[in-house]
Length: 47
Image (tube, rainbow, N blue to C red; front, side, top):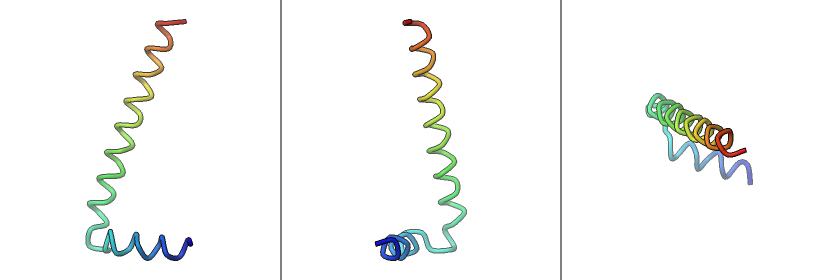
């Protein structure tokens, strides 16, 4: 199963698009952090 996933990932992101993939990963990470911070703020306001 793991091998199939790795092959699929390579087809999805050929080496020349690696930089673009990195940008998308960083973007997703920023969005995730923003959501977590918002959730924490709301949780702190409503004890």
